[in-house]
Amino acid sequence: MNGFARCAYRRLELAHVYRDTANELCGEAGDRGAARFFKKRAYYETVRAHALLEILGDTSHSKSIELRWTPDESLPGVPENEDLYAEST
Image 1 (tube, one colour):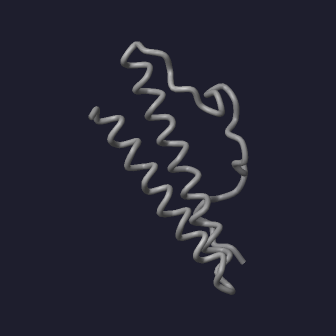
Image 2 (cartoon, rainbow, N blue to C red):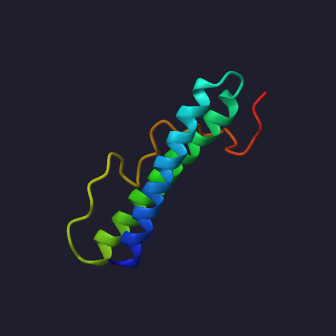
């Protein structure tokens, strides 16, 4: 397996771990800030994995992997002015 594909696969696995952690924390009282943090981490890992797959498609001179967004557009659902690592109050 190509290095880009292997890295993308690992990032997608990590995104699933983050998403599962967020879902578990949503059920516990008082952990909404931590759940939000893990949901954002899952989102960004998924975006990174898709970017790696797009690079892989471009470098192999094959058709680019189709994504839900194009690099020219801003990413959907990402808060522009929000710090990912800021503590929630």
